[in-house]
Image (tube, rainbow, N blue to C red; front, side, top):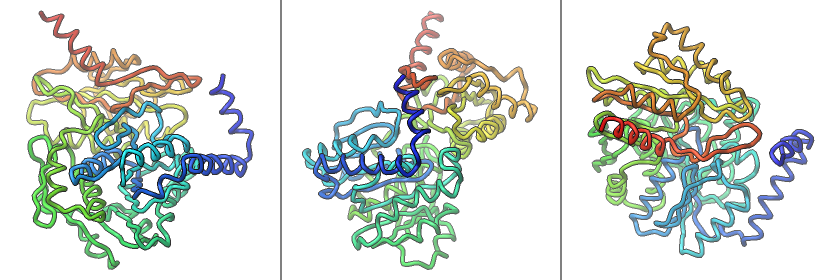
Length: 441
């Protein structure tokens, strides 16, 4: 009932009144908790993908440098070494929630705070009355187009974080120079600019007063990667080239904050996994990986990373779906096509249907798969996500890789009328594997 009432109110209120409402909440939250961000160095991380990982990597780097740090991401809240899951089903908490967290962090001697900043959060002014000193841009791909009205509006929403740096001589912007939208984010004024790149000529062509952080000799290594920055060797225990970009973003921000490269390298080498981000849940006799990938670009990068570790005779079994609620419907056919390019077996299943018909969501993905002449004998539609995971484990043989995408480390599945049910891909995988073992013995 409350869910339906909120939806109705949002439709009735004029946009100007709704914006004023959100702005008022932002000011009220900051006022109530005494504007705690003014007494911390706040780092905002925005982009389409990689935000949570960059937040986590940077947190660990600053902790290894013996600094007090707190952070919020879609995965978890963390104050120094104490952490708890983000169960809100939203990346940026409400205005009062953010300010309360900052106040708590300040009381626990945190001088630094890292915040994952989303376009939806910016749209609702959740970033206002927070004194950002560092803004990090990861990458930009089409997402939330229905919500923002156009890709250009989506891009501009991301840019508002960088607009906040204007006039602050101590401010720092950190930009992915290899992203095609880098020039837009470089156009915002900042006291200092850092750019990171995988040894791309683009970094050499920028022509701006910018500190450039490049890699060299990067290559896959032992379910991770190795690369060098200014001669410093770094081993990263995370799969995929995209995670090298994430590490570069965190490294650039840390360097801007005065952390030395040796400390950064040691900190990165200690990190074994990111919850729900190309996380290996099972390693033997076959591998099972969960990942949050929910856009075509992120799905392709996840599949590419898996492909890089599969040898001859090793099959890829993909379990995927797509979110409902009218969110980016265009991507469903694209994700279906990608699955046919990389997966030997495909299992379509529920993700977060919200108010849409789950069967209709699956049918839109399936239509694109059929158009690619994918063998129907290798395709399943199993609406129950637990049963879909069980089917994937049943199909897997020694050396195969099962990759389950869309939810990562999320703890809820969102259904119609605002209903949420507890969910964990990782937990379900382990439970279903245990059932399989018991059947064999």
